[in-house]
Image (cartoon, rainbow, N blue to C red; front, side):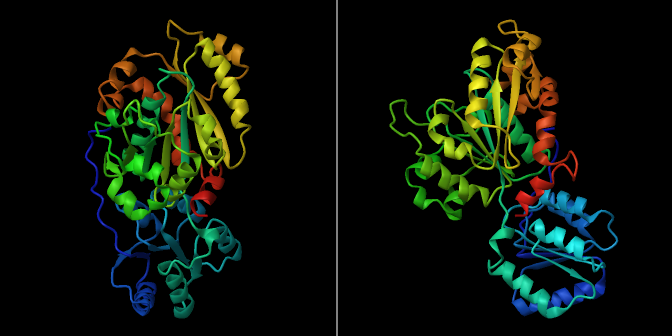
Length: 394
């Protein structure tokens, strides 16, 4: 829940090591000493210890985890990916000389796997590759991109987007940024009780200026793990985001955040189709009106079929409201059932006017969005999310 106490995000050292035995820890200490790294934190434990710790911590640049004695190590690698932020190079150590496991790790973007007893020179080289940024691009990690499109005005897309982003940040402890491209009328900042600034305007007008320092200074901190980019332009302002600027901004954000949410105004979407064709999940949010029937079908055709890299989820919001088709009528009209159904509850509309603190208390909305959160967080199963893991670790 939103008012539950949260662990503070302690700053991360350059390197963190989780080793299960003293001999391995000693060799790693010597290796990191050879690289000249001073900011190192050593922990006695396995990958399980690392997962628990990184759920509360900012991730380091270099992470060493031990899988010795751990059953089903690939499942734990998946869980590590869920809490570990982009930009972290991961080295795994273990007791098994298993070439098949080694190939699995490498395919998923783990920088290196070493079996015990550790040998200094290869280990030092792997650490130096990570610390100097010379790791192969195949293993570079990117975040997950989520577009949210409201099919029609008042469908509740922004409320759904903000609530989903908030829960990923606060409940699942993931690093999330929310980009509100409705720069003249966007309500994301309002729902998060934040004040828009000029950073998004500057990023879209001058994409060449956007780097990590720009983001650090420009984002609005809605919570410890949820950042926001939102502007509120005058109604007569001429700013219309150019696709090149949006693509450049997304590329930078995906290197920094685990999840990048983009609240995409429907009027703007046709001008940003290259962005919508990026590897992503697109949440199409509609009510059960006749207009929604027509436009959901049109947008599904426009975006195209699902692929391993890109998928569309249709969220039917406010189902059962008096001014819309019944759920069965809507399904017959559209030709296929929605992926997610959120039933009509007047408390949702009331809460959305009061902000995220009230929205998270509405059980109908939280139940309806639970499968979306499980999908995005990767908590359904290790096997079904292997492609997701592959994108996170490379």
